[in-house]
Image (cartoon, rainbow, N blue to C red; front, side):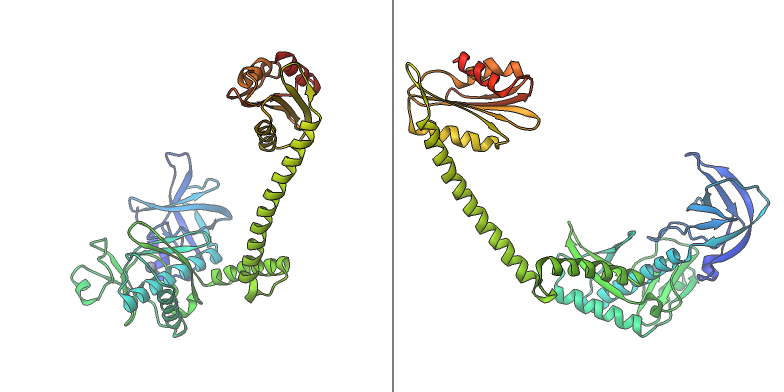
Length: 398
Ligand SMILES: [Zn+2]
């Protein structure tokens, strides 16, 4: 069922009337109608479908399948009835701007540097083209962006022409067209000749402007991200907001933001070094103080201490520090956090109790897990008993 494609006759048509030729439910259970004519552009050629309404019913999706243009709608409609279609114009205009902008950008890359575009993607926020090169320099990107914007400002016409296979040879096309009949050419005279089924504004000026944002290296090409038209302003607003916020946070004018950030990061690194050093010193003092308070048992000295919310790594350091300076010593450290109980047990070289076996004896009482070796072991579990009780059990287990 052939639908008259009104978007090819007048790309600015935003409202139209049509008759419903067919109404169906597809394999996914979605309801769609086929019209005798439509201004709704279906997804294709890198351009997303239009949205809008048919008799005030939302058109959610438009697809061309086997020559049929399916309008997926939120309700149902009767075959034979008439309907009024309305396109969400802001979305369509945006698509036309991005699409025409891509033609201009790709042509500028090829004209200036001979870089070929291999694919185009129009995202919700950003667009991208893949160009068949290894590397793109800052200068090249800047130059291409400049040329593209000149083409926009000079307001060249964007023409479309239907041609057949034989007529194709009259045009200097950027790449071979993928269809053999009903070939549609989109032409910016003396600048760009392309086979394309999308919608474009009538002249380059309506693209507004084009901005290359950034690019990234892919396997065999470079992906260039860009925006056109209204999206340039959206991006500018967004970036400006970020800069303003950063500027206020760092009390630095825009021009000095990078320098200021570098200085702050460098300062943080220095502080981290100092903190690490101070922590080591603290552990040292703590170890000395705990050693001084140790209980003398028959064959060894015992240190036992219960902490609240200490990082386990710090307690491991503490235990190692103490046992490295004293051979005949056993250190039992218990830590209570908001959710769990943890323990670190260590011993000096002169004692023979296995710390690994020691913690394995008490861990079941807190439903815990852990391990280590004969000289140091650590673990943790649930808060099923009081930390002092856990300590008592450790002492008993020695
Ligand atoms: Zn196009």
